[in-house]
Length: 147
Image (tube, rainbow, N blue to C red; front, side, top):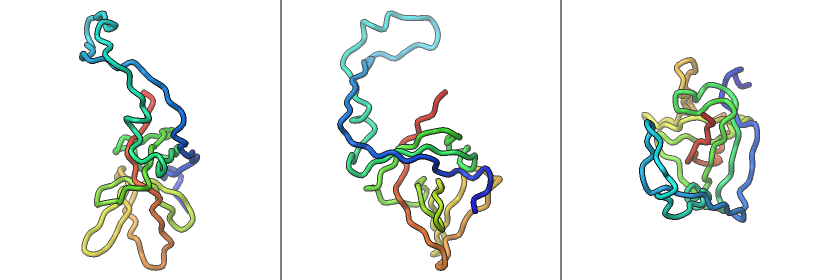
């Protein structure tokens, strides 16, 4: 059973690749100081699908809850973009099913053993043992986080 603030998946969405939204892309840097007439610098448009989705058929989105990945910039309510086509490597943040429950963790290998680790010192690493049922669903590629 997951701890109360364990980061877990609460919602899963598929990606159909059909929606296209063109958003203005500014070619000049935006100043955090005095305003500037930015309209003069709009060069082209950016489709966030093309920018964020490398493998459309293998991409899905999840909403997460919990605080175990807070130091990796993943906060309660964030949406993660997940790519099933990517192979996880040491340090990858993954979506996994661990003994029947979805979790978000960083994948590590050490001394021939595999671990899922949290990005919060309040949570202990989880050593992946033979008796556990584990399936990595995909690698997290982006975090959508409201500021």
